[in-house]
Length: 361
Image (tube, rainbow, N blue to C red; front, side, top):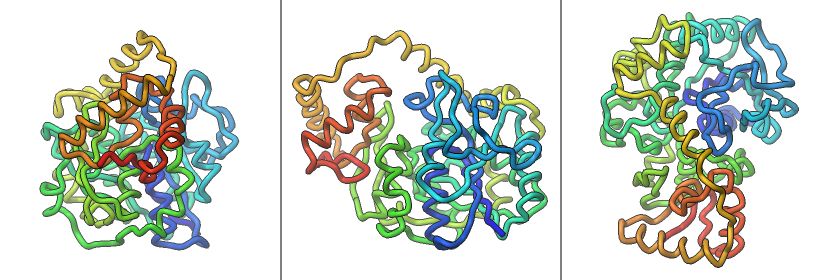
């Protein structure tokens, strides 16, 4: 028998799911991690999530669920971190495809539950924005989480909702989340991070990077995203809490509204109405802007002085750490240059690398 873990928002939630599985159940246990192929534009230049038709080499698990082995490949120009993940961690990754709305996701979950008869089902969200009401001014990406929450609450099987690293996504504050959190399930340690340590060297997720950093004992204020959001790194950041699934649905107005949606377009329309935006629209606009921006050659003589200026300004804001995504965007570089920039900085100033973050103070 195997376990099923649903990565609520895809991306870094899938990485955290691999770490959670190893921490809670051990190396000899087996798990399927059901997740979106919905990566940042620095990985996938196409906005929105990818479906099965965006890959070659997928393997069928059920009629509408496909596994993503290490040999799978996204069809250019699409990109995906899932085959890379499959190559580095022992869990099986399966593709969650939201193009048929919450109804389609519910069908995929039901098929997979029938096929696997899993020993347990966990729905994991890093940060806690799955508990957003929809009107929070800091909310940036409610749709993916709302879709998985909406589907999970319609499946006839016991599903446990877990929140890892409350507040680490910078979308809902820890103070707002704390009263909603149930029992403490686990506190990650540096030993737990070993299960995903190689993944953290290349994966662009900021929330999961901060989750791993807090587990390793990093404390301070981390500046993230293109907007430079400050996120507190505290003891609480390494924790995993259970939350009642029905309570989460009662709180999440978008999840309730999209339960009968049969297309992603319908779900997006609900997001625009309830939250005032759709994160896919944001990705569309940003993708169009990025294609018009010329690529700047990485020259250490140019990059390092500009990094020093950014760090001086960040220290004045009280910032102690940041992510390589934030540095890339703060220096007005292309997301495709993130890895090259990361290598350059670690090589030039290794003492500043607080893996997987960059130390400013």
